Image (tube, rainbow, N blue to C red):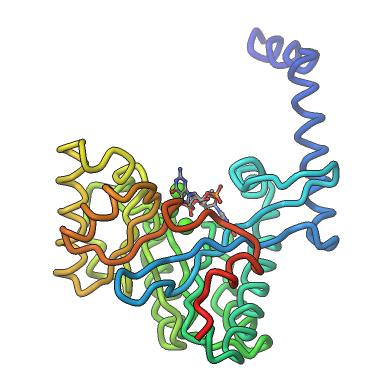
Length: 276
Ligand code: C2E
Ligand code: CA
Ligand code: CA
Ligand code: CA
């Protein structure tokens, strides 16, 4: 009875009511934005030491009705709670595939890979594989240029379903990168069961390079692990030349981070590409 009383009282807490109102407003605004073209993709270059820009990660931005670009950290958690991440994620996939189809028509751009983030709720949809396939086919995009970024927690939340879906998509030519690698689970035995292409070293391990001896060991271990599993490796959050050269020295040739470019609008990203 005491608990119920407390719960009832909490309902009248003005601060909480304000929170609820904000949440409801935010949810309504997000819902309306799906049909209202209020989302946009920004592109952050992925750089190879030898070949220059090899592709980009697509990062979602929300043009808030009251102005300003809202970064995903501020709306993706709510989108996940409410299930809105499923239609939003579908929009991201379709837009990314349209972009890939556009690049495929241009000899200067057809080599570009586009990495797309996938949320767990979206990935668990029974028709996820079909919706990726449909997005590729409808746009006329080459599956081999699409890379899906999955996290360890997403994959391990239902490993059999993950393996199943990854295998089918892999047969179509789609690639997979393990995002935020190193921040998740301690057991690595699952890695050999997954049809992965790439490990993406989390930016938290890059931040204090080269000074942090412990982060340096973790990074070297991930690079070695990737190599022995036959996977490529990319470091995210590379901000300084000292970080880049440390990574290069230890065998990581691919980078993403502010040192090269922030996530930027399509036209600005395309302007970074060489002219020949
Ligand atoms: P993430 O996938 O780990 O993306 C990397 C984040 O690090 C991005 O933040 C990017 O802007 C930021 N970043 C890149 N380079 C640097 C750097 O050199 N230094 C620092 N300090 N940060 C850097 P952003 O764009 O705010 O995205 C945050 C997260 O939101 C992403 O983390 C991803 O988990 C999620 N997200 C973004 N777009 C999508 C999407 O389309 N779908 C889903 N499901 N999640 C998305
Ligand atoms: Ca990512
Ligand atoms: Ca990441
Ligand atoms: Ca992250």
